[in-house]
Image 1 (tube, helix red, strand yellow):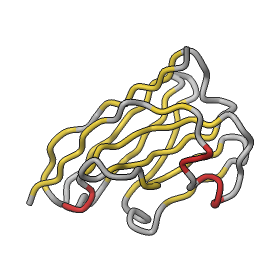
Image 2 (cartoon, helix red, strand yellow; image 1 turned 135 degrees about the vertical axis):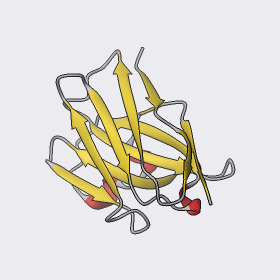
Image 3 (cartoon, one colour; image 1 turned 90 degrees about the horizontal axis):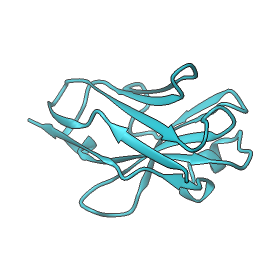
Image 4 (cartoon, rainbow, N blue to C red; image 1 turned 90 degrees about the vertical axis):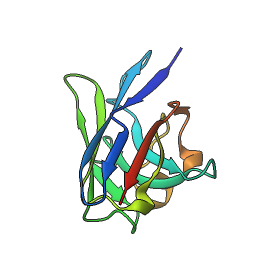
Length: 128
């Protein structure tokens, strides 16, 4: 059974930083597309960032470009999202996702339908 578990969420002041982590069990990240999505107020999951290890590419939504960085640690089989200069509008539940199918372009990487496995999410709250 494939499981993804997010951690690192919490309460932070506007302008602050936070790093999210995603750990996997049952499957390695090394051949998958990995993404971060977020949901505000229990709504639809929206694209935040993605990393294609197969295509060696990273992608970001316009809202987070320049502030967030997606990365991985192959030795620990973990995915990270470094979030800097946080804003109130970044408040959301953040989910990590993994997709088995090949995807090396922005369109597929940013689509939630590309991903097969999802974590339960971690809450990020930015106060001002």
